[in-house]
Image (cartoon, rainbow, N blue to C red; front, top):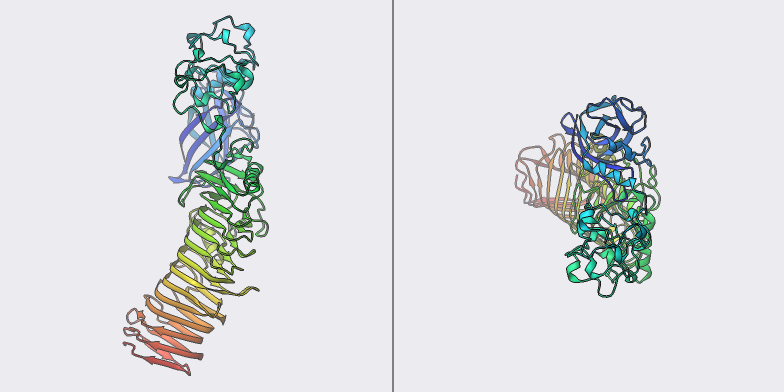
Length: 640
């Protein structure tokens, strides 16, 4: 068991909290899951306890109660002293009156007893900065300062914070010209109540004294500045940030006032983000931007018509939970029905550039059900692009409400049960650049669940759907074609890849105009029980495949027991067991033309007695045979 990478930080308002981040490995492998941590602040030789997470440690002993904390790919972070966390007590500033304070950690995986991690980690000056809390808020007033009493030499760098300044305590007479330089001001130290009206003049500011960290958002208003007080020389390059300036951006930053989303992964940001979305939608549409952060959403979000919810990513990502713009979904654990985590409610609503992560999902078989991560609300031209769906139980719902001309592009992830479902689309929808792979976990429980249950695409009524450049790995069904109460699909698909799939294409019903597929690749690596590339079940389907490869541990590349027409050409059948047939036409109609069958396996094509019409033309059989009992079978120009 190893622990690496310690980062300690204190906050501007000196709360009794210390941020701790680490990398945890067990037996040389990164730990994943819910860890049980115990913490104590001890002296240099560990014989005296100054603080522990539950207050029970004495003389450096192990605390009684543990703190549960998620570890993802070995990485974890926790706020020591955050009493909103179960079994965590605040860290008193007096701990840091001791000259040498060290952090002692015990870790358990929930199955084994807690183990002491060594060595103890020494805390440096960041933790001791909590001593600044000894100066009572507002203690320094203007009456206590003589004229020109505050000089640059008498102010320690960063010593002045907003808590030390009383209302209107800073007056012009108390400040020696040029004495306030940028290093003297703690971040956001200067707030509006601390400035008497007109006290800051150009002469009081040293060159580049005003930096962005020193200004609280909105702290400097017009009445605080004397005439011509702000000069170019007094403002450091880049000091004026968006929070200090009031002008029209062209988009809404959900972290800015009046919305105030935090993105800290702890505070509930649902109301703040929804308020920003409502404001944009109420103004006829716009963009709501979520800067880098982890946004806890305890219920769900609705994106209005003409409105885009946009994160930092401009291309699809992988392994980006807790990086970039991450939305943390927790609502409705335990049920697969309910309101989607994000609903694109109206015409032209868009979701772009975000990562969606379910932090409470478990690696059990079965995993925890949740409603769909993203749902269309029935509007025209909704767009989902550059989105990572790390581990939703269900991915994208374009079926419950019709979403004509939907546009789904560059979506990666590991939806556990359902990838994308489509129904009620009466004008061409587009789905492209999809990659569903174990971006969350390759845990054997999850792999077994997906291999037995998961569906990448579920196509029902959609007219001339365009699907291109799609891939999935480890699903039970790659693409399922069936009829709902609204009807079934026709469309065109290209560059379709289903790897380690139990059933590649499962057809029950399509429209008679057919589903046309070019460049199809289906393989099996042992997952599932059927091992079939194309499976036609009883129903009425029309499938046209031109250009395909079937390989791996497939039992039967093609099994067609459907009343419709299968057309298959320019395909390569690279493996199948000698006890079965590469192509088994049980019923319906088929045209099998211009295909290659790997050398001398056995029966390449079987045609059953229940078939209607079958044509077998120009295939390269290479020592394999054709076994036909069909009443209307025509076979010609096949090379033995």
